[in-house]
Every structure is written in C-alpha cells, then in structure tokens.
Amino acid sequence: KNEVEQSPQNLTAQEGEFITINCSYSVGISALHWLQQHPGGGIVSLFMLSSGKKKHGRLIATINIQEKHSSLHITASHPRDSAVYICAPSGTYKYIFGTGTRLKVLA
Amino acid sequence: GAVVSQHPSWVICKSGTSVKIECRSLDFQATTMFWYRQFPKQSLMLMATSNEGSKATYEQGVEKDKFLINHASLTLSTLTVTSAHPEDSSFYICSARDRRDGETQYFGPGTRLLVL
Image (cartoon, rainbow over all chains, first blue to last red):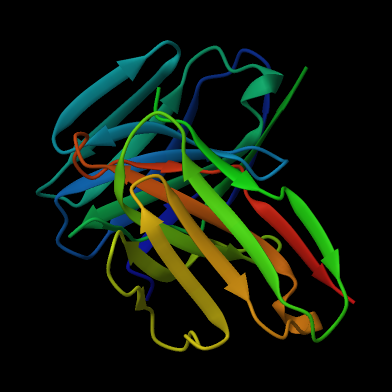
C-alpha cells in the first residue's frame, strides 16, 4: 500500500463543475502540500496545510490531521484548471508524493 | 517572489557524454535544494537532497558517481549526469527550500533530457 493515496486518478469534468480531489496518507507529517503540474511539466505550489482549511481564489484545501485525509476543491472549474494535482505530505522537509490526479476540464 | 530557474530546459545528447543541469533560486537563498526525476505519467522521484556547502544526500538506489550534485552557493545547485545512457532520459526537476518559508519547496520548470 502506498504511503499516499489519491483519488480519483483521472477526472474529466465540464466547465463550471465543482471538483474534489482526495488524499489519504499513512505517515506522520508536519505539513501537507498540494501541487499543480502543468502539461509542460512545471510545478506550482498551491497550498501548504498543517490544519484546517485554506482558500485561494477558486481553490479550497482542507486537512483532517486525525483522519490523515486532505481534500482539494475547485469551484467553477475552467479548462485552464486542466493539470495534474499532486498531494505531498512532508516531514523533515522531504515531500512524499501521491500518484497525482489527472484533471481535464472540458469547455 | 520565490522563483526557481533551471537551465537548460531541454537537452539532447549522445550516449556516453555528460550533461550538467543548473538550478538557481533567483530571489531567495536556498540552503536546501532537491533533485527529482520523473518518467512519463509517473510521480516525482526524489534523487538527492543538496545542502549548501556540504555533500548531497542521495536516496537509496541513486548512484552518486553517476549523478554528481554540487551546491556551491546559496542560490545554485548543479546536477551532472555522467556518461549518460538512453535509460537516463527523463524529466529532471529541482526544487529549493527558502529557509524563511518553512517546509515549502519551490520548483524549477524542469529539464527534459534525451540521450540518443
């Protein structure tokens, strides 16, 4: 069993839909990161969470430390949100990467 | 802020040659830089952790003599793939940790290496 599990692995949505990506982890962590990898390969850090909830624009990330679970929500999805979303818990500064969720938003 | 650059963005080389990839933090000091490789449709795999002024720490299974890492300053780390072979063809990404910013890593745009 992987230390970090993401679901779904692939997701196709229509523009405007509300999207949720889930991440479960089995290791002890000090923080959890959500990353976005664009088709060209570049990676952007979206959030770093250690508790609760964070919001940035149309993106919302939550974490439940006791349940070792985090979710990334995208409201009013847009084709430009198409990317791979990666959950990466961290401890002692190293990231442990999930397998990623490949999101495609259709116009 | 927190921009990391990589150079080159892509490189094609002949088998047996060595390739150097640079990773720079442009607007912050990075005491720690990380080197990853990524195969198509797979997750990032940590190769090594590079600390300024000291030897890099390599992950299990990564040959230190094959992948030479130098972190000579607070803004520059280099990865040299020595005697490259076709199986070294991959996407190499670096990231840098801003010591003022806790655990967040800032990622470079990546370097695509194709060894013929």
